[in-house]
Image 1 (cartoon, one colour):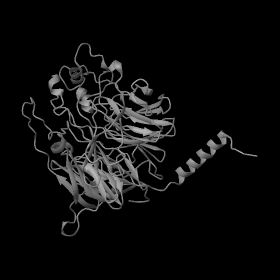
Image 2: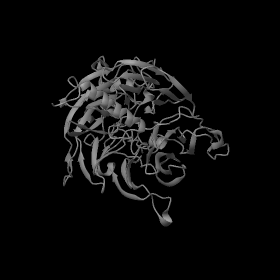
Image 3: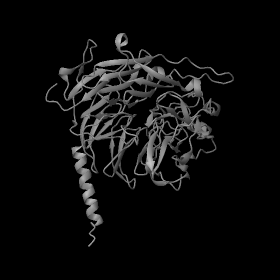
Image 4: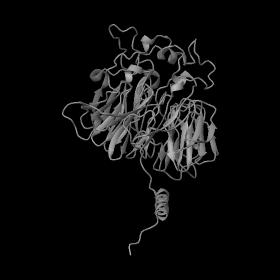
Length: 522
């Protein structure tokens, strides 16, 4: 007789096995932004502390006095300004920052925090374009940010986007011999010289690898003149520049570029990174555009002899129609007047009720044939109504209506890449509120108010949510019930996202980076 197991029993066995694997899983590196290609902000780590004491700063400028810390393995001063989220791979920690108005990228020893080598470069000179009304100020903001991109590490190589809008490939071990402590550059691809890519404010895009293919969002944007309500200044200086490119990881040769029509409705900048996912046997590349539209491109399967165009598989407009009711104004002026800093702004109350267009700044998260993405703006614009989308990634064409699984509009604008586990999704908004949603329906389970702006994404690890704001690092229990475990002050704003690797939590403030681990004594 042919014996088969009942489907319910099979499901129970599968769940038991997955739980066992989860509890016995070994520690892992965190080799790229969000840790994996799908970009779900979840770390498979155990034994992380729910609290730590960051310690006191040495009044002589020597860094953190370790004897005053608790559950801290090491702590270092990264620079004058840190916007780059760390990456951990191969016994090393990599992080970008700013020092003396130069972009800096540091390689640290994972065990001790000791610097192994450092890359740094000055700002690119200001660019003036004949016939263009405004000077293209591409060094004003980078001068206060430095290197924002997280690298992706692949064996003995790493790749990141510089503050000079270059894609650079470095040897993870740095130079040797007399040049020890210096970087070893393997190749550089200059997106301005080669493609006339001109970012607005910053180059934030973190690359992702698929075999020999390096996918990079370029950060091409509009001319930056934030105090002038004139649609002309919202035009893209180089509308034909790509939004996403593919480079040969070995040589830096351009293999492909997208042709998405984002420049026609570019709001400001493009600060989203790309993600990858396999949809029913077809690999797709997901990108959140500066027009508020999420795009899916077909991934390359072979190296072309000459650059090709990426095929657009689908697109989904993430800005709800009611946010586009401008009362007779053109879209560019309405966007301008949604910035609370402007004298005639519609958003002076800054209470989250303003409805207007937004870009996509978060990274699209791919999981189980679905893409999860919120809309948002530069937090300096103030609060405003956001939207969190769950998209069916299996469709084609314009899927704005047909691809919507759910849309949650109970949050403010958001920069946060989401965390998803155990049937729940967690996303923070600019106002500092952390929202817990049912991942299947989008129904809100709870909201935690952090009472301060949030630039960062939440990390879910070891049953805990590490949620940074400009004032505090909150630690909450993951689950359907809101439970705060701790509230920590790092003494400075947090503009990066927490990550965890090999049993250690990494959290950076404006100036310092802590490696946090359960310890009996300092």
